[in-house]
Length: 149
Image: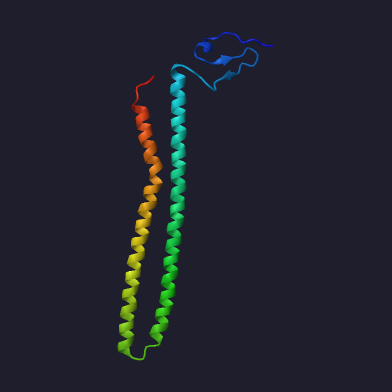
């Protein structure tokens, strides 16, 4: 059975075996190792926040795309219905009045959909950036601490 030998690494909290030369760094202790472990955890959490933000933005873009497709489908359907209605007009005056009404309805719908998609975009961006904001605060607090505390 191999025996462990004393090395300078023992004082740093790392056990080194004479046979394999492998170091057990699963739970290092002392000085720079704690700081290193803290920065590794900080980096891992920051990467996780970026991934969560990317996923939220991707899902948000999908939601906005579907909202745009729905608005376009509604616009085309309303356009066909308006064209059919215009074809049933019996006078020029009736045609002009209906055309003006359809144009006004189309502009109102466009404004409503644009506003809705704009609010949706702002909400999605706010939700997507929340993990990054939280990680920036946590990183700033960690980096503001004096070393060794």
